[in-house]
Length: 348
Image (cartoon, rainbow, N blue to C red; front, side, top):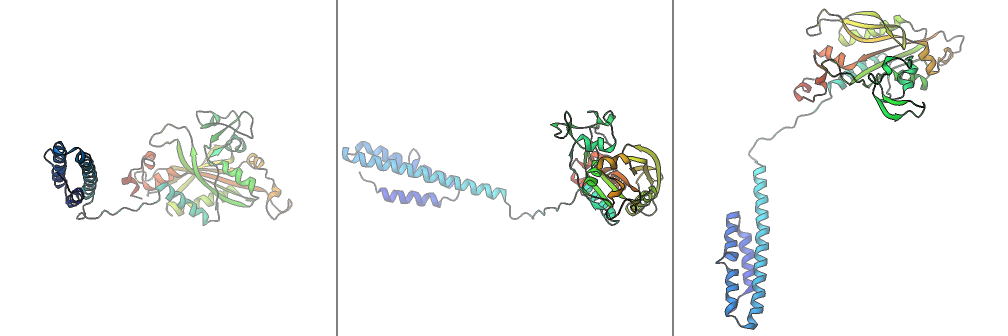
């Protein structure tokens, strides 16, 4: 008994390659490896072969079996992959256009507010979000026993302040620390706005969040008055909210300004709140203790002497970005800013 092993190998390779589908490949497998296939037939023929022939024919049958199994397995994997790709891609379907993203409403609002003040000569500055108690409290005339220093009102970190023994670092609770940092690095006159995130452990509801954004403003020069502050904020409100906006300044208390005021506005553009007074920011004249903490004196006015400098003075103001955006766009819940609902974000 003799078999043309090379021809069988060639036939197997050709049959496997010609199988264009899994059912055709199964027919090839049965032809060579099935119970009545060629390889079992070769094994059955070994019984009538001579001792010399058995060794050669047995090895040849094994080689044929291994070759058939290998080629069939490879072809099966290739056909399965092709079928998967065909199912995943239907070239007859219309294309899907990917939408373009845009800046978040909070970022847009910050940019719009900053642009108004930049056009009036203010410069944007940034401050760190991790602060020391000195910048967040002490330098702003907020004493150690003030309620805002309590852990219920401030996020303290498990990190010691390297410059104050026994004190911890914290997440800033307002952007006002930027006032002192700017004054320490720059001599007056100066006019800066400081936007950024702030953190307070407030209960989260429709009007509160443990993280929100503020914009701080600071102007220092000679003989600055509260009238200058009112004129600046009036110009801002009319530019940002419209010329028909009405304003009022209510006396208030802030440790780092004296005198201090809160600013309310009234406008028909506010949806559902027309005719109502709405608070938008706090302001006041920089407290002398804040100047002292920053190391300022009357002689620090750039290009001036003690005799000609006039009185060193300045004003500061701060506003919540989310509140401004909610008023201007009629948004009723602060949580919608961070819920990542595309239906909300697409409106702006």
